[in-house]
Structures are given as structure tokens and as C-alpha cells.
Amino acid sequence: MPALLRPGATMRRRVLVQLAGIVVIATGVALTIDAELGVAPYDVVTTGMHQRLHMSIALAAVLLPIVFLAAGLLLGGRVGLGTLFDVALIGPLLGAILAVLPEVHALAVRIPMYAAGFSCITVGIGLVIVPDLGAGPAEVLMLAVAGKGIRLALARSAIEAVLVLVGWAMRGQVGVGTLVFAVLIGPALRRTLTWFGVAPDKAATRSDTASPGA
Image (tube, rainbow, N blue to C red):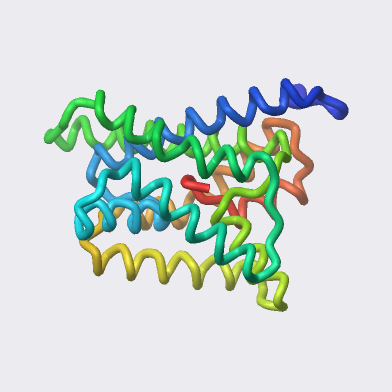
């Protein structure tokens, strides 16, 4: 497949691709939440905040990235225009999409719903990464921690483990879907980024830090 964005692509085109990615991510996250089979580590906390603090998922999905972003900046992380888009738009879009999704109970519907959500998240993160307009909030924190001399894989594993534990304590959605996401998102995203024309070494690095809310 030809590169999604060629070298020298205009800022307008890069922003449009980024915004498309944000919409696709929000759709995917909404589908995985609605499937109730377990969500990505990042979203375990979002759903936990919804349950424990009685706030909307949309609000939780705005506040949590701000916490990640603040922590990342304190550790010397760097942000870009895309970072701000992620913080401002994913939460409200997620809330709007959840509001129109039907409540489902049958496992025969929930499993393909989760699979569709996982696929949307993978493609959406790819679309957000390709324009290279800035790391997502969780990625800012992971890269900042790694910049302190901690291996990137260890930084990601530690942060995600904390997210799952905190989210679980808050009655967030932890399930087989959480494990599926943790195991498969890296390989799936690497393949997607390569398909989009990203160099294999960069695809490997970015897939190691990406999170759906980020």
C-alpha cells in the first residue's frame, strides 16, 4: 500500500488524518466498553472513574489524559498539536458515541462488537501516529519515564499494570478483553503502521507506547 502520508504532506492533510484517527479511536473504545468483555488498561481506569466517582465516561476520558499529560510534562515530556487534539476531543466523542450505541446482552453480539472495537482502535491509533503531530498523553508519560533511563518496555508494562490495578479497585471493566488488548495491540499496531507506510523500526517503537485514549 502506498504511504498514507507522503513526505512533505501539508499540515492540513496531516491534521485531517489525525482527526480521522481520533474519531476511529473513540468509536473503537466505545464498542469495547459496550461489549463489556474487558477494556484496554487505559480504559479500565476510565470505566472505574465512571463507576466509583459517578462521573460520565466522557468526563473521565478528558480528566485522565490531563493527569497523564501533567505527569509527563513534570518528567520532561514533550507535547505537540496532536497531543492537544487527543486530550480535547476523544472524551467528548466517546461520550457521544456511547450515547447512541444500543445496550447488548447476547455474547454472540458482544464478541464481534469487541473485535470491531479492537480493530477500530488499532487503525485509529495508526492514523493518529502517522501525521506525527505529537505523542498521545499516555505516550508522553511513557517516553518521559523512558528518558530517565528506564527501558521503554518496562515503563509501559509498569504503567499499564498500575492502570489495571487502580481501575480494578475502582470497579472498572477488567476481563478477557483486557488481556487480549495487552497481548495483541503491539503486533497488530506494528502491522497496521507498516501497512500505512511507516518504516519498520519506527513502527516498532511507536507501537510499544501507544494507548487508545492517548
